[in-house]
Length: 216
Length: 216
Image (cartoon, rainbow over all chains, first blue to last red; front, side, top):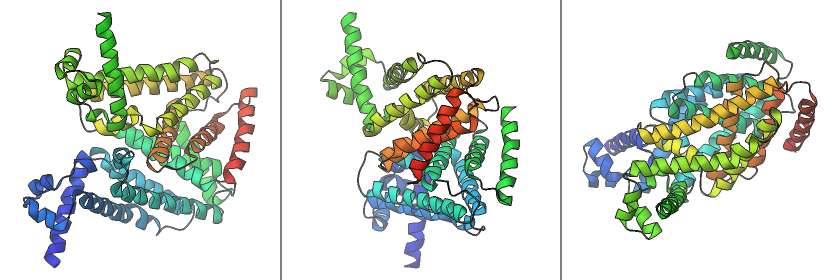
């Protein structure tokens, strides 16, 4: 059993690597057998179908994303510090992935017109993360770091847009400086909503410094 | 010759429809022959290779995009009216495409790790549009509609993010209200940069009305 789990983990690890390059639709039992040096029936014993394999990869990606982005961020103080940590870790994750691609982002384009369990699994994971982000914005309002005029879902939508633009410009256009654009965009978005607290005004002054840099 | 051009246009039209659903990578001479009822060699006579076919589709898409988005917008007064028209027509184009997909956006994900002439053609078209948008922001600054503190490329990056978030949420998550989120996001971005002119203050007051709506 222990060995079975280990083998399964090895296959998923290889599948994640393949999916990051070829997309979830590029995965197949045959290709994985080749890459892992196993027999097709050996891989098949762990994943009854290609769909089950794709869904396992999505779940595994989600666990890794939570470990790298969500869990360390929620150890930060609730409110703006936690929201900033979530964004910063998300930016770093997407930047590290510039050479391989984020399966949330590429998967959304691959599966947006393919209804079924794989799309549903992917959408559920993406929605879970969006909800966590919206909640952290709401907490920043509750803590008085952002004004209560702030519309949480709207701000989440705008923040997500910055991440998508970062992924697009860095990965497709290969524009240098995309990470800095995303970070500055985040500060500009927050500037709408900062309450007049210590945390708020620190951020506002760093924002205007960054804005001066951006105009150079 | 006239008839040859007509046939070529028919093939490209069919190819555009296929690419919107299956992606540019889903295109093949064989599939197009099937869809258009022509022989493979007939299609091949017009496009010497699959790559040439893909590039022709990208060029044709670009012409259509210019006709629907760019050309009507530049008939608006330079400055904020033109910038608003560009954004609004872009939003409408992406919304109409919710059921088929924008080949700029899906193509960026398909080709971000496939260097070659197809990626280059796609990147050139996307860059052309981004440059046009940046220029229109610069004109809005020159006209005094936006403050001269506005960083044009940064604002363009942020506006592009809203369009990508709209495409993602409407097409993949099927969230209702994504179009309104993108529009409100645009007004919130502009609010940073509006100069104290008539055009500016009209926009600022419509923004605060929209912000109240969003919080309901």
